[in-house]
Amino acid sequence: MFKKLQVALIRKFARKRLGKDIAPLNTLAGHPDVLIAYARFSMAIDKTNLVPAKLKALGQLRAAKQVECPF
Image (cartoon, rainbow, N blue to C red; front, side, top):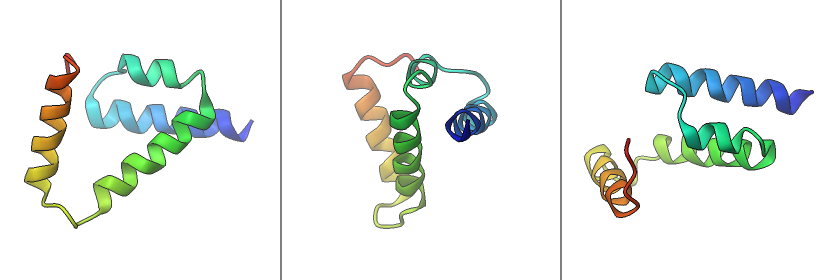
């Protein structure tokens, strides 16, 4: 029950941040343990100041290009 609530909150925050539901999130929602761990990891990366924000964005774009991500 608690995991379903966490998944619902993660989906809500992702929808608010991205403006729509994305396919990877829909896939991970079927595996709550993985989704919750991934969300925690993602939030930790966003909060760290060890790497400048512009460099993080550049890394994200490069990784998305490598895997041919449409986002």
